Amino acid sequence: MNYQQIYLDLIQKFPDFEIHQNHPLAPYTTLKIGGPADIFIHTKNNFQFKTILQYLSKNSDFAPLLQGGIKGGLVILGNGSNVLISDSGIRGIVIKNSSQKIDILPGKTTSSVTNKISAHRTENDPINYLNFAKIDYDEGSSPKIKVKMTSGTLLPFAINYLFNQGITGLQWFAYIPGTIGGAIWYNLHGGSRHFSDYLQTITVFNFKTNQIEKLDAQKIDWDYDNSHFQKNPHLIILNATFNLYQGDTDRARQTAAAWILQKSKVQPMNSAGSIFQNPPLEICQKIWGEQKSTGWIIDHELNLKGTKSGQAEIGPQHANIFTNNGNATAKDFLNLINLVQNKAKEKLNLNLTPEIKLIGDH
Ligand SMILES: Cc1cc2nc3c(=O)[nH]c(=O)nc-3n(C[C@H](O)[C@H](O)[C@H](O)COP(=O)(O)OP(=O)(O)OC[C@H]3O[C@@H](n4cnc5c(N)ncnc54)[C@H](O)[C@@H]3O)c2cc1C
Image: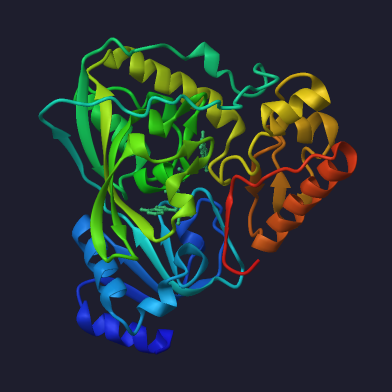
């Protein structure tokens, strides 16, 4: 079976769903870059998302095409704020997940992930970059409350919605335009806080077993910009429960506002957040004797701040944030990524790892 036949089958089976063929992906990313998907399905709620995943995985005609998960014929898009999709697009099925629902649950919370992750988040120039220490505080003694959110829920919406219900805890992640699914997949960081610090359970659709399964957040691996889900692309995140706080909403709102003010100066929305991870502390110690951020390295060691390729630019404010200044292509972005990686290797013998996810044939 080919994608044309799958498309015809899907529109017949699901006439009420939004399904397109040869559909451009650029509008579904913050970079506004990316060619077409063979098949594009926009699921608007959890029922549609679950139904389509179940149908695709159970249908023996399609399943072999999709088993490569994210690398093969099936890609899940949240808000597209951490991806660089190739100019030729994606040969396969893309599901854009807009399942947005928040439930405040009765009952007791349990503890969330206890292993604190070393965040490598130090900024070496907090005056010009970001100063998380200035806004950080501990609200661990506030009463806890359990909240469930579906994976397509937008983080900025969730943070404000929860503040209005008297619930705090996610203020560190203000100004991040991702969904709950993308945030879990990446184990999002807000300053030195990680998303896994707040997670209790994650419900997934398992493409190998065709079952919905609930995972205990304490029992799976989390790291800086890394999660169990990156190693297991057959697990699609449906929803999650969080341990949050009945905390001081005035303080949390002020914290979110202060963080938004700092971030908006250096991280414009026509970007995909940080392009590279910060190098591990032990490597930085060997070269500089202390932790350095990639923004500082690109700026002070490689002198590449402001460098352009077509309409892609190495951030003039923050050198680890590359922007699309108009009609940049994925190739323009890759030129800049390669330039930085090659120069870091040549000058410092340093391997920089992309934080952004490259999707499609680059
Ligand atoms: C202005 C700006 C500021 C940012 N600031 C930060 C920051 O402070 N910290 C930070 O960590 N990041 C930051 N980012 C990057 C980005 O917003 C986050 O990484 C975010 O979590 C990505 O979520 P998303 O929904 O957009 O994911 P997408 O970009 O849509 O997808 C990212 C990956 O997650 C996978 N995925 C998405 N949903 C699911 C699902 N339901 N099941 C399985 N896999 C899934 C996708 O297949 C893809 O591989 C920033 C980006 C921008 C543009």
